Length: 385
Image (cartoon, rainbow, N blue to C red; front, side, top):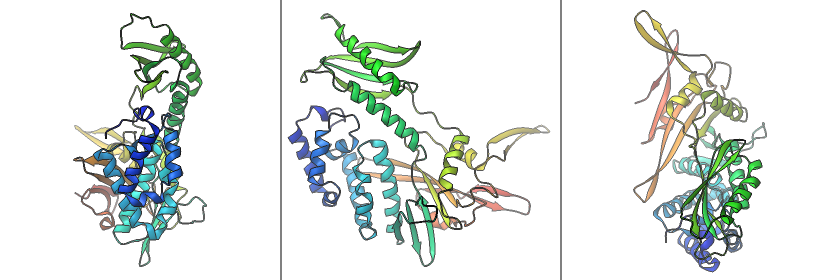
């Protein structure tokens, strides 16, 4: 049964709970994460906007089935590493942004467990800010930090959308509408946006044609487009048929990425091999942007008749700064052919790392690596393929 996240509020609670039961029966290890009481609670909460987990458990699509199949396999791999205890709370996160960030951590921990390493989740280190996990074998160990570096921005966006949904998700006028909001819309605008939508619904005449587009402004700036589709068929009140940001997330500038990764670096143990995994989420990040952030902004200059390029000395990787980072992985996950996921990885080695990691440690079918090559006068970064 295919559902979108906005269908959930229209489905009978008992029927919806039955769909959840089918999922946990199909993947029995999920019973350890989602007990009956928890399932009943999220069904009661189906009128809220942040229902990604509820949709994932109830929708019977290839994507959701592949997701639970992957999660189940990962949890089974990590049972003797206390994976169920560690991920129980994290995998109960309802908003999509948070759930998928925790899933990245689970994916990588299980990946290295499958390669034969001992796994310790949230190992204790002296800084007090424990990394996501540590892998170890025969005295060789590596610490991993796998949080999304745009966590704060995602929290702000989720908080704003929760406020919008709470204010507009159920009003007394029986119209279905969508909200397309500008990035400049803030929580302070939500109450005015609610009044705007209610007044718009109440001013609709009997002969009005749909869809009807309206524009919410504040101080002359257009902050939201409201599309009213018409009266709802089954509900006696209006509801939010969709909520979408009007502009795509802009790719962060290299200096922003440097600041965010630097904050992570200070939380890693000194004199150890450390890897930071960057999962962009909704933020577009390409290899060139990461290269500028890590190795310095690229600039061009003329030498004779030739144009040449160089890098400024403002990169994250420096001889005496951020040397506890061994490498950074840019990780992208993709749903393939309606049945499974693949993850591509780009590894950016730190030429000044206290503890460097060899190329073979990261080798995989979908991995490319930028490696340091040293000559008598300089260090150059070259791709492994």
